[in-house]
Image 1 (cartoon, rainbow, N blue to C red):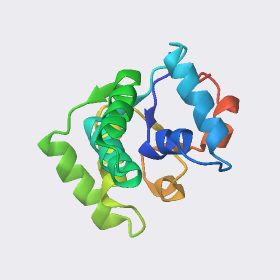
Image 2 (tube, rainbow, N blue to C red):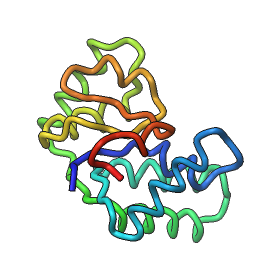
Image 3 (spheres, one colour):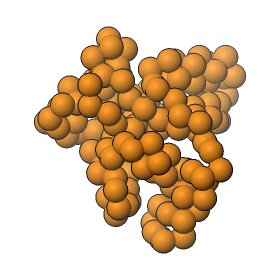
Amino acid sequence: MTRFFVDSNVFLYALGAEHRYREPCRRLVEHADAGRLRPEASVELVQEILWLRARRLDDRRQALQDARDVAELCVLHPLEAHDLEAAMALYHDHATITPRDAVHAATAIGRGVGRIVSADRHLDDIPGLRRIDPVDIATVDGLI
């Protein structure tokens, strides 16, 4: 199986309202649920899902379930001090990256994973990381 990281927006689009990314993200989640692929992520991704879902839904139980479901689908990597240092360097060097995406990118790079599925174009400029748009995932060799 080809290794790749996944950004939180993939799960958020899959769970969310109608959007051009909703169906491609749902397909990725369905493939992960069926065991045909195994996305990798920082543990911070699960915290981000929990925080955003709790804020949007105002339903603690559902937000927790969504976060648990995401955690079960992913190989989770801890956030180590060196990841945080690398994330801060990425944040410093790339004016458009968000702090959370810097953490995801640094964790991926630090684990030797050179691909991330994300709708966020600002990840295109990160050296050592190739962003795969969720719309294009079916055409990327080795992922699905």
